[in-house]
Length: 302
Image (cartoon, rainbow, N blue to C red):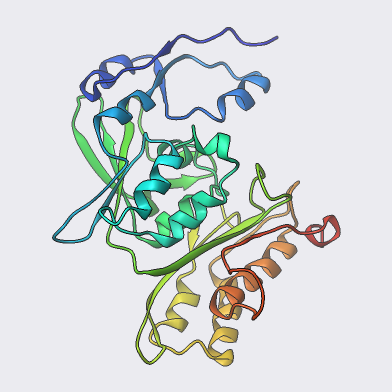
């Protein structure tokens, strides 16, 4: 039996949200709701936070520090525009992830807040945010604000550090470097959950050495994870073949993939190595390293 149609509330004043969330559920985009209802999930009164988008810019940049504040309630399409606006500053890894997120129709509705709160280890915007050391701003039921590091916010599959009556208002990241990217592997080029994804960022010094190396990968552990061991081996190094080989071999220390309906653990380990290698040493004459990759059925089951 199809669950009853929920009541939908759409506040436009941030101060009104906390009072509406008693016994209700906050949504920001709601692109997972139909899937949940088809599975028979009961959906309570919904408080749609996207009405708050008119009260603030999608992306702002602190002139003194370069820190970016990214709205959790604006659609991803608006964020993509804000991230390429010279006044807001660039975030190449997140921009690339948004460009590969689902489809244009979904990006016109989906939000960073919704992608974070679902707690999916395959979420496409999360690796770029985790690599950038993002902080999550959360409004508490009394209207106060608390901030949690993204790494601590992600607790497990479909579990995040968000109590009843709380909602995510924004995400803040220090000024990202100009070099970064995102790549995913999925069953098709649009509207597919990632079998695996990788975000990276680093500075490239004049002599070619990489500094500030930060790597994050999704669908290889209960949450999106940092590839700290591989990053440490790349720090302050030239990405020569030997250095890259060592970093790629070190990925296994930070991931724990499983077999599931989308791909085998063995295939994910192979892909993890390939994605990092091609981010560091893009094959000549091919598309950019942040492109979408579609495996064959035989490959993903190996």
